Structures are given as structure tokens and as C-alpha cells.
Length: 379
Image (cartoon, rainbow, N blue to C red):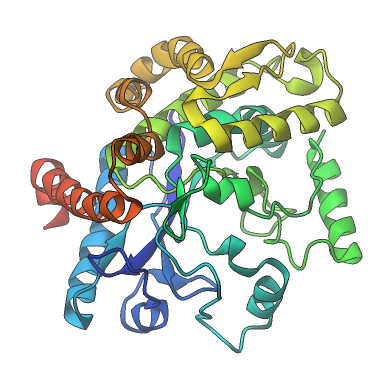
């Protein structure tokens, strides 16, 4: 059994010098398949669900090729990696749709803390009770996926002390989200939040993981992992996704994997523990010291990920996507994007130079993958 997978990708647009420029109103008007965010400086595209990693690779690349071609027609514009306003601009909102009242609420409540770029990974699970259990487990392990994906060490031209500044400042909403014991529990809680006004609508649940579907909270069919920073390299993103899928297959197969029964902590204690782990992963990513949800033992994020990798490798191999999981070892060995940028920063590269080099490297990597792997599918 393999699962359906799809991505929501948010990316910044701007100049080759790293200045982020708001173009989403033009992009959305002129191109199919792109959606606006409340701020015009980033734009979103969504891949169609697929069980097949080769198809997903091309589905990640194809819209970017279209978007880059369009940006060239507009002027000397490009796509900018990273998950924050790395080189400047966090002092004000640039509204993409000034007449949208929900966007009014977002700007007035959160300011530019939400003007981030990220990737949301959606994986199909049709049974709502299995989905809720999967959400409980992956919520506990979401800090590991943040650690692998961190790509926002800069804000307004300065190193912030975070590897993921995005998740360090992001307003998780509502401020307290429990571990849902059942689908009915989740429905009741969402209804209560809507009445209380802590959620403006059913989409206004901004936690590291949430159940998703076509009629939330009633009809649910997928787990949405929301914690990851933008991973610009499709091979790295698919490796992170393969780890998530293999872990989910393990969870589906084994009903005893459940924080509510397998942990020495209560549900409320687990919520606190994972919030602390998320904060640690936002600061230190792969080098973060975390507490394991089962018994509270202290463990480095990279060691926990290595343990999980070994644990699920046979599943990925058996299901035919082991080759997409194996590049995870390269991230563990060489560091995530934030760590690589900070290594350059430590030897004297200023943030502007780091980002402008990353802009070039991102485009070169896309061209390389298109030529090697996607030319026939993208033709």
C-alpha cells in the first residue's frame, strides 16, 4: 500500500539581488494554478495528489518553470528561497487583496509574522479514526520534520538566532490545541472554537499538524503537515515526504502506536512537551536537544531522525520508494538549508550574498532535475 501525497508550496518572488517584490495579484490574474496569500510577496501552487514519487517530482517542477517564464516576461524577476523576508521588508504588509475581510483580520491580528513561505505536505488517510491517531503521533514528531526542513535563519538582513525564524515567530492558532482522542472530539472542539471566535473559520487552525478534508471538520481524508519551512530542492522535499509516508504506513499497520496509550505523559503534558520540542527545533534544527514523547528521554533531533529512518527503511523499500527516502542521509550529513547558509555566514558571507547565491543555486538545481528526470514528462 502506498498513500496519495500532495504539496502546497508557498514561494517568494523578487529580484536576483534578493529583494522580495509583491507580484501575486498579477500572477494569479494571468496564470492558472496559482493562489494568492494575504501578502502579495508570496504565491502558492498546489500539486495534484499522486501515489507516485516520479510524478510528484515533475509536479513540483512544472509550475515553477511556468512561473519563472512568466516572471521573466514581467521583468528581471525570479523565485527566492527561504521562509522569511530574509533581507528586509518585515516592517509592513503588502496586501494582495485589500477588499478581503479575512485578510483584514490576519493583517491586523498577526502583522508580518505570517508573511512566510513554507511547504505543507498532505498525505491521504481515509479512515477518520486512523487519521486522528496518525495526527496524534505526527504532532509529537513534527519537530523532526521542521529540523530537516529549516531554511529561515535570516530576517531583515540579520541572523536571528533561529534556524527556522518562520516557526519561531509564527502565531500558532488557537494558542492551545489538544491531542484529539477521536474524530467526534475534533468536531466538537472545532465547533466550540468557531463559537468562541478563537477560529475565524475552519481553515483558521494553524498548528504543526492538522486533519484536512473537503468539508472540515466533518469529512476528513488527509493529514496535513504544516510545520516545514520551504524546501526548494525537490529531491530533499521528497525524501522528507518519504520519511513521513513510511512512518504513516507503520502507524496505520500498528494500532498500538499512539501517544495517548504509549506515553508516560498525559495528553496535556504531551501538548506542552511537543510545544517545547518545536521551539527547540526552530532554534537548533538538527542539533536541537528534544524530549522523546514516549518517556521524556533526551535525544538529539538528528539521532531521533536516524532512529526513525532505520525503523521505516524496510517499509519504504518494500513499497518501492526507498530510493526517494535515501537522500535524507545527505541532509543529516551536510545539514539543512539554514545550517548551510549559517556555515557560509560564519566564515564571512553576509546574508545578502548567501541569499543571492541560493537564488542562483535553486534555479540551477531545477534545470538539472528537469533535464535529467523530467524532460519527457514536462514536454
